[in-house]
Image 1 (cartoon, helix red, strand yellow):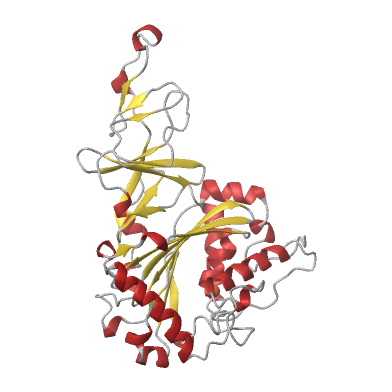
Image 2: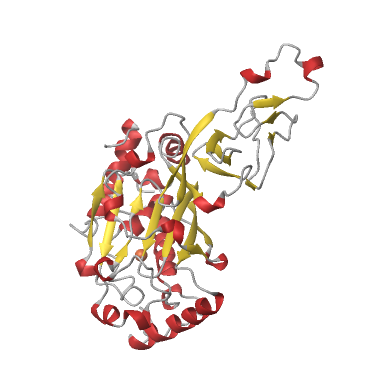
Length: 393
Ligand SMILES: [Fe+2]
């Protein structure tokens, strides 16, 4: 590895070393609001889900009073993880190790053989460690600290830059969830998401429904916001070309794509006919799991299938059906650049960039003044967090 190479603000080690990875888990992911799911993932009292915030596992549970509470998923007895991934309608929370049991408010309520083994233990003196949970734009968010700043403060100024979508009203279709492990550092994935320069090039044939030259973007606090209008041809034929039923709030004056990156590791894609989350979860210095969930305007299954078929055919027809490196898309090819799938194009370049980091000749020379300013800004924000561990607003 070239020890003097940088990326361009952060050192290459930030993308390759276990030490950096561990430090980020503590400083960044243990100190920021993290996406935990959609509000409807937890519906009834006793429903819970767990989410990792750096080194800390947090459980969100709905109480009998319909309130959401968040606790550290850690039995107070011996520190064992209390609950597994998700659960429905639990009456209480019981640790598998010694069956210590807590109520939905996190209060210890029973301990096997208490009188014999723990005669002096006052159950009501022990409660699970509290964390923070909130709902913002139809999404569940958690913070490991019980006294975290309100989520509205964390996202102050961001909401005004997002789409008009009423997320709670939209429906998640069961087959819409995508999960993929990318062999690249999570920051490479994030930077690719924010790299405006590549849109017209890597995606010359996959994201040509947008007018990238007219994109407007910038940072609000540590969060990146981005909007771009439709390309003329696409906009003029919107009703025939959009992949799904038009989202009711997306009236003519709101059209375009809103694609923010919410610090540190979460993207959204809000368009005229869909609303999607893009959650990048760091697994290792060179490994990131991405989970995408999409919501659409409510429609029948029949309408859904019909729309899907229509969108695959018509847009392609209008644009001549070319791909970046071929005359027509070939999903069977070994080359992802001819699959005609913009996400696969991104995965490909992220993995290629990660591979190059080990090359002794690796270095970054020039970065684009405007189109890659976003990448430099993001790296400066990370550098600031790693030095001081505090938000800018
Ligand atoms: Fe991309």
